[in-house]
Amino acid sequence: NAGVTQTPKFQVLKTGQSMTLQCAQDMNHEYMSWYRQDPGMGLRLIHYSVGAGITDQGEVPNGYNVSRSTTEDFPLRLLSAAPSQTSVYFCASSSLRGGGPYEQYFGPGTRLTVT
Amino acid sequence: QKEVEQDPGPLSVPEGAIVSLNCTYSNSAFQYFMWYRQYSRKGPELLMYTYSSGNKEDGRFTAQVDKSSKYISLFIRDSQPSDSATYLCAMNSNDYKLSFGAGTTVTVRA
Picture 1 (spheres, rainbow over the protein chains, first blue to last red):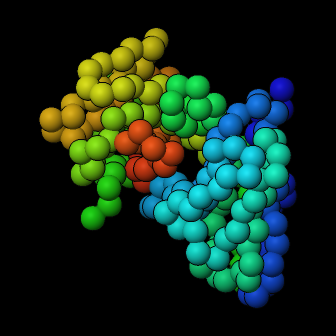
Picture 2 (cartoon, each protein chain N blue to C red):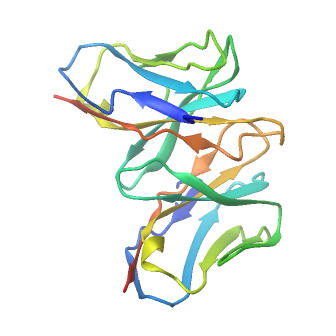
């Protein structure tokens, strides 16, 4: 199993550009999520999904869109990049058999810089 | 005030020492408590999780939860240089959102 994969590993954008961060998992997990990690802030939840066709907002959703058309994939779209979106982005997945997303498996991250 | 507070450190200990990490929280609805380890430039990985109050042990790692004080701890016994990492606490109130602490950076000196 590859686990959770993310592409690209690094990306530099100019202000106003849009892009999609890709995330895929091969563990048949119902739950998938996107976090951003900034120094001193820990991980902050952007969006999450509990199954194909179901998404919801997390703590910091503004400026980001998600969709979940399959169990495996959960792309994150930046609509119009801003310097405040410079961060490391992590995708994670979890089974919900235990009732909640307690055992999350994280991808390797995407380092995004917006100039 | 953040929901979850965690001292960022850094914490430096000699090999073989006991590492003590902790988090405090303000949301009394939290019932599930997790500890993740994150090596430099990698994604976090789950170490252990506990439900409600009490202790849980897994090898050299012990997690403690004191809901009355809103305080959780992670102890690492016989620490090794390979334990050098950032440790993140996380909490959940039986919904689909986890709240993370900022993480504590630990260095174990050989």
